[in-house]
Image 1 (cartoon, rainbow over the protein chains, first blue to last red):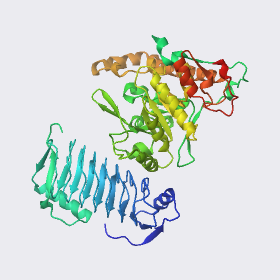
Image 2: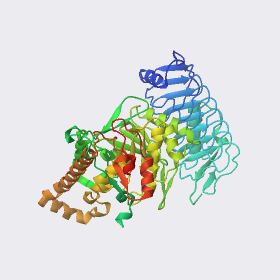
Image 3: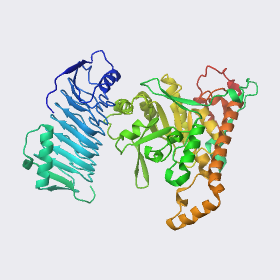
Image 4: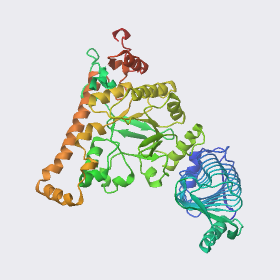
Length: 220
Length: 341
């Protein structure tokens, strides 16, 4: 996900629906930078079906990129709550922080947050990959069923609460994790998966510095 | 026992002096609009089927869907339930997203209406809450916006609320610009709590400047007359599952593997039996629609949505108070004389 150059769309006088229409009219493989986005628009990016790479020069509000499946997004600023909710393909990169429930219900695709993420990051994930480079709030991986949640700077309380599947990789301190989750040593397969994810997300790091947390059975 | 049911204590009044609208000019269709676009979703009749499952119908399912489509009756089911139905026979479909599930792209993009349902079943208990991913109730609006956009922008998105929903819950749904509200009653009859919520919901819509906001009533309504009473109290669309229930295939009657063969043999020998299921349902639907049209005509209204509480009289003072609450101005009708109450 390198820096994008080429077409620029000034969104100052455009409604969200108009921005969506512009993006959906893009040819496959296009690259575009959106500037002067008014405020932090909620629901931004939902309904965009273009096979394009879009860089957003600003912040986005709550429930941005819901059900994203074809578009690769880079957000230069922050994202609100529920960023990448139910995403099923392609990628979302947030250069600053994301709110609560980042990547909730994801079934595919990749969400990368370079800054912090709020509570319940990766909530009810059923697939896909979520990576947070800075800290996350409590209850990361809550009710997770599948997929990979990678936390590169520790985790808060009750990591993996209600978790039934998938893997959480954590580098750093975990404040607490529930009894139904067990900490595993990184195996070669884990290292390979995580290294690929780190490389894909453009995050430097050695997969061996992480630990794996998985559901081991029993009640939470 | 039946007399203790609230709907039995409400009586529809015929309006002998009002100029009757000929039945052929009556329009009982209802429209759903989105806050985001001008597109309308039309139901030809103010009914909906909310719990039909293809597996209960087996080979009759496509034909059943075809008949629902002909009557203009929408069905609430996942897209996968209609995968075997020919495109021309697919009725209007209402998709539902339960709060514990991910949104599915195909579900949203192929739906005519979308419901966000806050029900969560834990064992035998049903718990209601707002979608879990909301940190604050005011995030309901961006979630609805986002869902609407992801679905293509043209599908109305509504909120499902329980019969015991508080005024604040109803208000929150309205203020989040839900395109419709669904009230669900899980008891075996329409109870007072549901009627109260229905009246409150319509009051709030009126207060907030959107008196025609559709309200779907998912309850055990067992006759056309009950349906019309609910419409007079504020419902726009009424679930007819209970009206059709005696004719619908039941889950427990699904044949086992061994008995399936004998059933097929039987069907082969007597093809009229399978047809009669559909025939009975068609007959019941036609009869119900005719009765609803008759009641509209008798009450002196020409369109669905014009019925109001002035067409009802209550047998008890409690219910009378409930009915008075539900009165709202209807421009096409002269005010009724309150002294007659």
